[in-house]
Amino acid sequence: MIRRGVLAAAAAAIGLLAASATARQPAVEIIIVHAGTLLDRPGQAPRHHASLILRNGKIEAVRDGFVPVSEIPGARLIDLSDRFVLPGLIDSHVHLDSDRAGVEGQLAGVTDSPASFAYEAAWNARKTLDAGFTTVRNLGNSDGVTLAMRDAVAAGRVAGPRIIDAGSAISTTAGHMDDSLGFKDELAAMFDHSNLCDGVESCRMAVRRQIGRGVDVIKIATTGGVNSRVGSGIGVQMFDDEAEALIATAHLYRKKVAVHAHGADGIKLALRHGADSIEHGTMMDEEIIKLFLKTGAYYVPTLSTVNGYVERLARDPNAYSPAVKAKIEWRIKVTGESIRLCHPRGVKIAFGTDAGVSKHGKNADEFEAMVKYGMSPMAAIVAATVNAADLLGLSAEIGTLEPGKQADLIAVDGDPLADVTVLKRVQFVMKGGVVYKRL
Image (cartoon, rainbow, N blue to C red; front, side):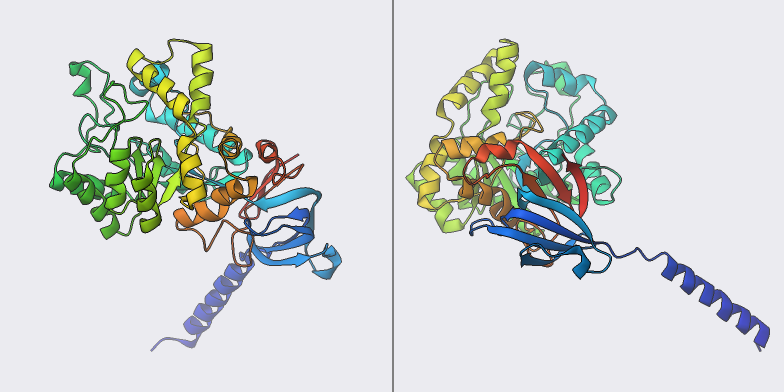
C-alpha cells in the first residue's frame, strides 16, 4: 500500500509542474496596425484609413477607421497611417543558395562547400525578406542547403521568408538539371546523378528520392535551358512516358509539379500530363493557351531573369560560355511575348523571378516587367499574392489579409496601383506578426 505521505508529495510535485507549465505559457501579443491605405484583398478595391488587429502573429480582424489602442487592453500600435499596406509578397521561383551564374557559378559549384552555400543562402534569404517577400518557393538545390534553411526559418532560428522547397530538380541525363554538363569526362563522373532519370522506372525512382528527403514540391525539366552548359537548345528533352511517370508519381504523393520548360513542345508535353505550373514558358502558341485554360495550370513567367544576364554581361562580356551566351541573346530578344499572349486570354499567372539567375533582393523588378508587357499593376500584385498563394497550396494561410491568416504584411510609400515600381522600395516588413524591417 502506498503511504499517504508519498501520495501527498506526488500531488505537490504535480502541482508544481502544472504551475511551472502555466508560468511558461507565452504572453498574448496584440498589435493594432493603422494603415493609410490597405489592400487587404488584392483584386478588390483598397480601403482608406483602416486597422488590422493582430493576435499572436495572426490576423484577428480588419476594421475600417483607426482603432484606438485604448479600445483593446494590452495592445500596442504600429502606425503606418501614411503608408500603403498590402499582403507580404510571394515569389514562386527562386534559388536561394546562390546568385552567381555563368562561368563564375560553374566554378563555385566545384570549389565551394555546402557550408559556404548555406551562409550564402542565409544572406540571400534575408535580402529577399527585406525586399518584402515573406514566402518563396525554392525550385532546386542539390545538397540540401535550402531544405535545412526551410526548417531553420520555420523554427525561428534564421530570419528569412517562409520556404516551400523542391530539393533537387529532376531531368533526364544530359538534360537541363545535369550538373556535370560542361565538365570533362573525368570530372563529370564525380557529380551526383541521383536527380537524373531515363525511362519510366528510373523517373519514378527519382521522384521518390526527393519525396524521401521531405520536399514540398517536385520540379522537373522537360526542355533544355538557357543556362544549360551545352548548346543543345531549348526544345523537348524527355519522352512522353518519362514525363507521365514523373508527374503521376509526384501526384501520387500529393505533391505539385513545377515544370521548367522553354520550348513549345516541352510545355505541351508537361501540360498534357497534368503539370501544376510551367516555369519560364518562353515559346507559346494557341494550342498551349487552350491547354492552360483546360487544365488550370499556372504560368510563372520569370521575366526579370534577363536583368541578371544584362548586368553580368555589362560587367564581363565573357561571363558566359559561347553556347550559353547565344541562348541568352535569344532569351532577351523574345522576353515578354508569351505573357502578352497569355494574360489577355485568362491564363492564370503566378509571380516568379528565378532569382539566382537575377539578383536576390531585386525580386520586385519582376513587377515592372509584368506591367511593361501588358499586365495592370493590380494584376501583377494579384499574381504575387492571391495567385501565388493558390499555386503553393497556401491560400488558407497567406495571400490576403483576412481573419485567421498569417500576419504577413508590407508597407510602401506611394501607391503601387498607380506606379508598381514603388514595390522596389519596401519600407516595412512583417512576417507572422514579427517586424523584420522598418524605415
